[in-house]
Amino acid sequence: MGDGIIFCDRLIRDLKRASEIIRSANSILVITHIDADGITSGGIASTALERLGKEFTIVFEKKITEDTVSAVNNSREDAVWICDLGSAYLSEFKRSNIVITDHHVPDTKWRNKQTFIDDFHDIYHLNPHTYGLSGSYEISGAGMTYLLAKTIDPSNSDLAFLAVVGAVGDLQDIRESGLVSYNKAILEEAVSAGDIIVEKDVRFFGRDYRSLVQFLQYGSDPSIPGISDDSRGSAAFFSELGIPLRNEGKLRTWNDLTVDERRSAADRLISMAVDDDARKRLFGEVYTVTRFERQTGLRDAKEFATVLNSCGRYDDAVTGLRICLGDLDALEDAERNRSDHRRNISSALSYIKENRLLRERRFVQYFDAGPEIRETVVGVVAGILLTSGDAKKGLPIFAFAEADDGVKVSARATRNLTDRGLDLSYIMKTASEMVGGYGGGHTVAAGATIPDGKEEEFLDIVEDLVSSQII
Image 1 (tube, rainbow, N blue to C red):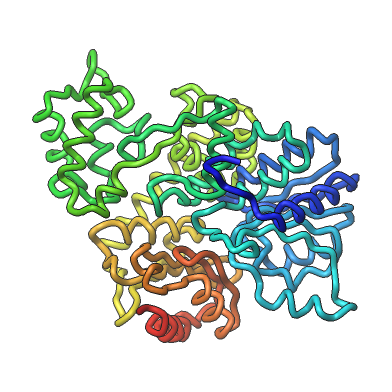
Image 2: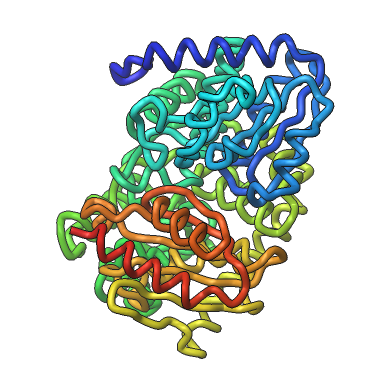
């Protein structure tokens, strides 16, 4: 299946077993995450169940809480399918016929519990970590959900494009400037179906809708000297190449350029990159979703994922789901969400800078936004700060924001730090539990919820853990 990848025999066996549970159930509760990976997972699961003629309910969750665990354990449905969530809470589930398609680091206590016959439950846990794969870049939650949907019925292979959007939304293409491993295999299925076109191009965000100047000005990763965060420098760049910024009075976008113009601009940008790593991040694979017209804002996989993220982060994941299911009438609502998202990100960054909230310790940097930044976007803001010149790339960043059930903490790190041994998933899980909270995620990005007033104690523990990990 694609790129010479041979799928693990144990994974294939487990997919078949899980598919039998779904097929045999008359009613199913689907619980999925609110980000792009979770919403596309929900779209894949919903479509697969709809095609089977199953009775099902889908619920979107920001995170697994005590209420979520209770809803799962007390569900009257024949089966529960949890997408892009659940792995970190395996030991909390107390019913049978649970199927989990997730990619986050699993609950290490779960296997121990299974040794007690009274505590044994039929949980079909499909997670790359259990098959020796990375859940950070080899396959996403949507990818695992897609593999199960395709096992349920091979005709669901037409949903591969949603798994690609989910993976890109989860930044799984960042490490190698393109999708690899199982993600690559799924991508090739979407290409074969005619739903995705893969090109090599500049990987900045906004190819379809940002003006040329904004495309370069706000394309902050990697930073290009004299261009990034510099509108005049970006305009001069195109002027020097003889590339007009307008056509018949209308501002041009990157995708408006001719093949020769784009090649000329890309070559110049590559020559301006500061090092080989920056060149690698600048130029690589980009993915066009052919099912949608350009004016929808869904034709570029990154932009599609951003639309879904903006829906989920503003308590409107259902609109994102409608888009995944092909309902373009939902785009008007999605555009309002996306406008709110852009405005909130911009104001959040300004708030942090103007109030000088970013602080440093010896091994970490952090900011506490309190109630001023939504808990659903504080991680995005932390990631943007880390790739900008406003934060140190040599330190992981931790962001705090008020949440209904305590304090939300989001952590982000560069690949360089994770390559040196940093594992944010372990750090967030360990530190949060030591102060009475809970957390988890990936090596490069993770989250937690901790009790109010425990921030300093949490940071003390985090510092000890970071200092012990980094080589």
